[in-house]
Image (cartoon, rainbow, N blue to C red; front, top):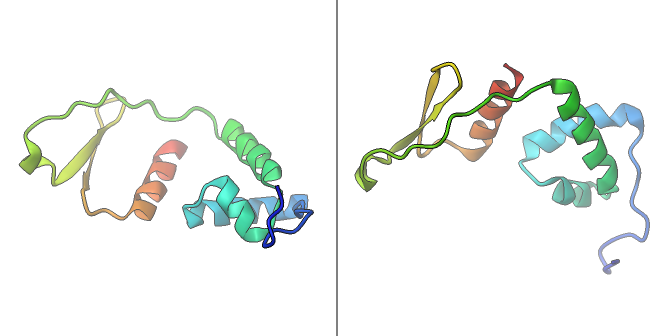
Length: 109
């Protein structure tokens, strides 16, 4: 569906642009669709490139089930319990972009 602000044809990125676009996508915090719209790109190319990147990255870390302990007053922070017993304590005021970067690092492990 074309709107007055959208071009009739969206640009298909060159293969050489894809790594940089994926890095920009990760840093933006936007969905693939929103990022593609902001760059006037065909989102299908980014979906495919992102899927390939994830497949090449290998398995993701396995997280244990979520357990909530304590009352409302104790929810100043939350804790990620990773497979193997590693725990990461994250304050509730931790910025969303920083949390996304942390999760990307954990995915790479």
